[in-house]
Picture 1 (tube, rainbow, N blue to C red):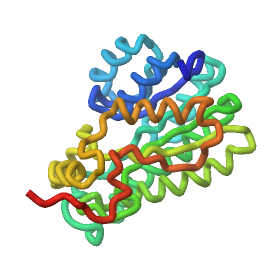
Picture 2 (picture 1 turned 60 degrees about the vertical axis):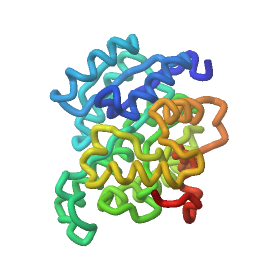
Picture 3 (picture 1 turned 30 degrees about the horizontal axis):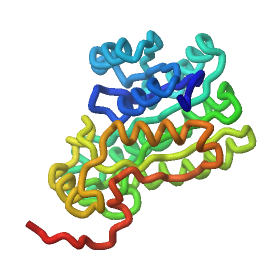
Length: 260
């Protein structure tokens, strides 16, 4: 078990379709002790059964738009564990209306919210937890290919994910002096709760299957297994990277498969 004895916080778990759930399951299987944070009271009823499944009573509410909530979460973890080895940031949000038209129609308010929740919160989390993270500890966040290329209707979230990937590199540089690492997984499209905000998401799923070399969707379990590797000692030489788990979709320039 590559995470045996490690203490891991999973932030942003919403339900059993979440990528964060796949990561938590892989971490648990690989021997990690798990703590969970969730966004608000409306999510709690879905998170508590998952916490029971994972065998943890360490479940905390955290609104990442509030610095005090993040600080309180770090203090709660310190009180229980004293230190930590892994923090997973599986958090992103933009108002639903920002996905309806094009980037040109992005509102100033929507842009600010997307950048705050999806990007700045990772910076704030790393700052709050780096002081209690053990040497060779790891931070991990989640992105999507829309950070690199235009994905219609992904809009402001593509801009936010590009900023998140850049922030990961800069944070990796900052925390390297403590022998800590930060990486990012860019997962292929998965039917999560947040994905349904994106207009035409089902068409995106179909296109990805048609174009990707493996010809199939990725699963939350596959992302979870990659996360376990990246947060383990096996990946101790990897930091500041964006790792694609997308059935090879991101390597393709054009498809060699005929349209149906």
